[in-house]
Length: 213
Image 1: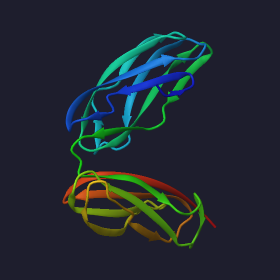
Image 2: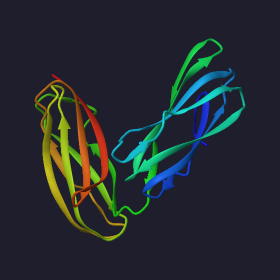
Image 3: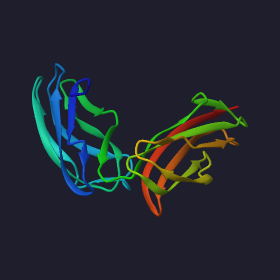
Image 4: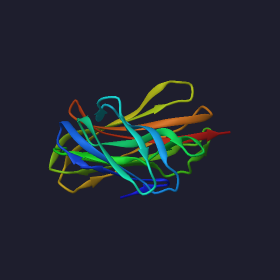
């Protein structure tokens, strides 16, 4: 089980079929203080891919060394990321905790958007052209795959950068489409890569870029 002090956590299963599923969240207190009145939520980073149903779960107390499990229902369309959020109290006051991202794989996908990164430093200069690279892997022989790149600017605009057909992708084959973007504003830019098969979105990755003078 992975851990981020003071909680060790596990989500099972990590692979589901499309549609409604139940998952089990296990939490263990690996700290030295009792955690109380815990509001526990499983949060989707992309509700188009995975939606968590209901309003979370409640744990009255979690003493040091204690493990408790709760069941949550999800509706999954494509592979996506989730994280666990816990709010409550501990011996010396309020307690707030979040897990790292957890990937939940959804079966039956023709291809996956493995990663989306920039080859430049996370902090770049205004007016400097930047190249971003996505990695797409075929899970079965796939056709009609299209990747789109978008950017959300600090000013609130959403701009299309590029759209590219990927042709036929064999099982296990990887392609790495790229896009160039020259920022014209200071501040945080949010870059998106979307993978489609026809009109159906099957993948989404996000990259952040801070632009300074």
